[in-house]
Amino acid sequence: MTKWQKNAAFALALYALLVVVFRFSSGGAGWGTALLIALVATPLALWMGWLRSRLNEQAQEWGRRRFRPWPEERRR
Image 1 (cartoon, helix red, strand yellow):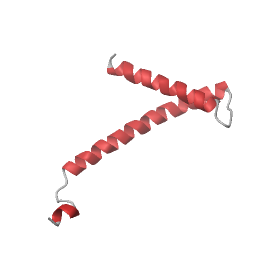
Image 2: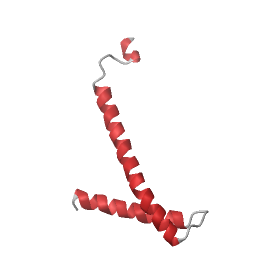
Image 3: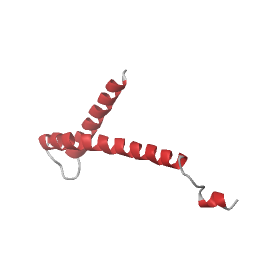
Image 4: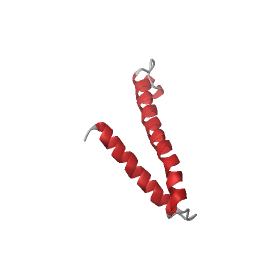
């Protein structure tokens, strides 16, 4: 599978999971409502996952580029 196909399969699986969760949650939304809510929530969840990985990458870069040692390393 190509990367695009893996991403599409993951998004579709996430969408299906969210539909089931919203349908059978304690509020008990109908199927139509659950489909619409999941349609909004899926891109939001994917974006939040992307943002988290991006922030982690930037934090690692910042840690590599730190110009002075950490306080515990200065005491040595």
